[in-house]
Amino acid sequence: MTIVRVAPTQERDVDLSRTYDAVVVGSGAAGGMAAHVLTSQGMHVLLLEAGKKVPVEQELRSMEWPYEHPRRGEMPPGYHAIRHNEYTVRQPPYAAKSAFKHVFSYVGGWGGSDYVKNILVDEKDHPYTGTRYAWVRARLLGGKTNIWGRLALRLSDYDFKGKTHDGYGEDWPISYADVAPYYDKVDTYLGISGHNENLPHLPDSLFQRPNKLTAAEVMLRKSLAGMGRVLTPYRAGVTTDGVKNKYRSKCFGRGACGRRPGGCDIHAAFDSPTGLIYPAMDTGNLTLRTNSIAHEVLVDRNTGKARGVSFVDSQNHRTYEAKAKVVILAASTLESARLLLLSKSRQYPNGIGNSSGHVGHNFCEHVMGPGVTGMVKDLVGRAPSLDDGKPGGFYVPRFRNLQDRQSGFVRGYGFEGGSGFSIFPDGAWDTPGFGGQFKKTVREHAGAFIGMGGFGEVLARYENYMDLDPETKDRWGIPVLRFHYQFGDNEKKMCEDMATTAKEMFEQAGIEIVGVDKEMLTEGWSIHELGTARMGTDPKTSVLNQFQQSHDVRNLFVVDGSSHVSASCQNPTWTIMALAWRSCEHLAAEFKRGNL
Ligand SMILES: Cc1cc2nc3c(=O)[nH]c(=O)nc-3n(C[C@H](O)[C@H](O)[C@H](O)COP(=O)(O)OP(=O)(O)OC[C@H]3O[C@@H](n4cnc5c(N)ncnc54)[C@H](O)[C@@H]3O)c2cc1C
Ligand code: SF4
Image (cartoon, rainbow, N blue to C red; front, side, top):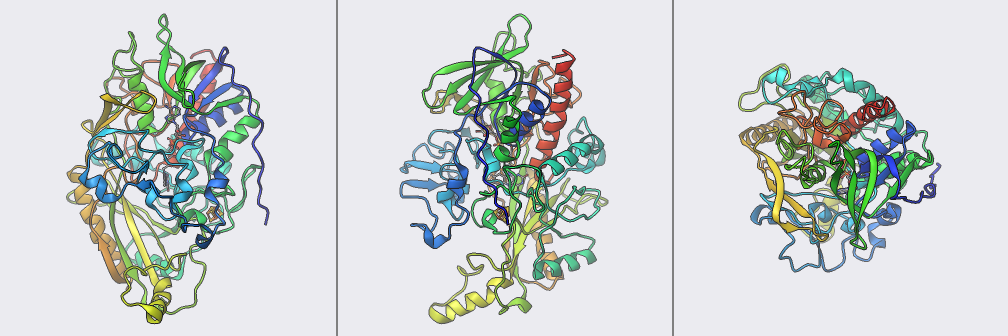
């Protein structure tokens, strides 16, 4: 077993007197991909990242057992993660009146919260206002990819051409055939594990070795096949066979990424720094400046083109300018929209790239909550096995509104699930009793549980939007986002159906139902925020063209999830990267032709 730990290349000095070919804002999945593609095309790129460079291996400590940590992995006193109930009974800014010194989003409340306290943002410094929303942010080199859940799925023409299929919303200005070659490139460069299923609505990737299903999962897979549905091993953005990248090792199935709030300290799971940014630095074409909070895209008064970015140093609070011939925003869906809206000038009084008035609008994501927990009686009492020693469990792809038309809602949902023995025995909290008998019952049943929860498409609607709060500012004096967003009737009906079908699938498989969740979780819970600067062919109703290039400002690109026209029900990160690759290849070609 080889575990690679290679230090990144020596960073190049930042030269703010120079005009770079391109400045990229944000270093997560989107920004990392932009840096990778543009530097490999020979462009000189400055990457601005608002957060710190965190020694992430030291934070994650994946090999640490719970008993080796003084608080079994929990955060120290004075630290608090917002609970589900707080999101539902209070209004943002959630941390404003909190007695705790540090407040984090709900992800900080997952097991092992101490491991992410320097990865998630402190809500005290980063408020937002408006309607309720569980906003999860990670401000550090690599952004949320340091702790993402790794489920790496493709979209299909059921998504890209959703309006053609069911009449709702808008089609994307591209189809699956346009993106497929770039999905292939992402698969090959970063590695993805999974199993071919040949489904038109969930295209296969170029898979490396899949994770093994457990006995309960095999049983459910067989039963679902009889219902015309599929259960497939978790399609993980993880290299199981290895990739050509000296900063990454292949997965050796410790399961640490699933037992804690995410993260893989040997970088078998994709993260942007080791997967994209360090290799880009090795080209000699990438300059990185962390602690750099972009707050305005600067405009050339004569040409109306972007001329760079103004940013605040998060440590000394001073403002600087970075000059570049092309500006690429990749600060994540909501932060990129905030940046566009913040960039008001004489030429662009509503914010740069916003002649359509659509920036901040058409926000969409996934709705979560409904799901089912069951028990396979035949598995009670079996000898323990390492069931969670892998980067994920299983996925049940969408089956609604494909060939059929479901009454009550459009679009669909999929389920993520897992089963078997885990580091903390499933069912322990709900098992009655105490003492020796209690322990025996918990041990006997621990490997027999199976559960899954739905992720449904939230429809993109113009009236779901974010704007700038006229009063509230963050710690650096930058106006914050104000949410005007809530789930609609389609999401509610879809969630009712999710709970019903989840139960029905377990019953059909002969799995004893232990619990059915029907409640919808708060808006934002999926951490799959999308929309706000959508692509389209009509500059009056869209912000970007098919290459994520501003209709208004030709040397301005927004390459993250803000460009997505609809949410699909498939997790977005692999699509974010495939699209960023496609757009940046186009950008580099246009740059060389002198068209930007
Ligand atoms: C716990 C968790 C589980 C997840 N599970 C999955 C999953 O299973 N599958 C999936 O597809 N997705 C998953 N996601 C979502 C996934 O992480 C995101 O889709 C992906 O990271 C988005 O990439 P991004 O580059 O747009 O944003 P980010 O990764 O958030 O990166 C944005 C970067 O921009 C920086 N930035 C922000 N504002 C500024 C500014 N003003 N100036 C400079 N820099 C700025 C941020 O600090 C950050 O580093 C999960 C996320 C979390 C947190
Ligand atoms: S299971 Fe694989 S991807 Fe997950 S932490 Fe372990 S080595 Fe990393």
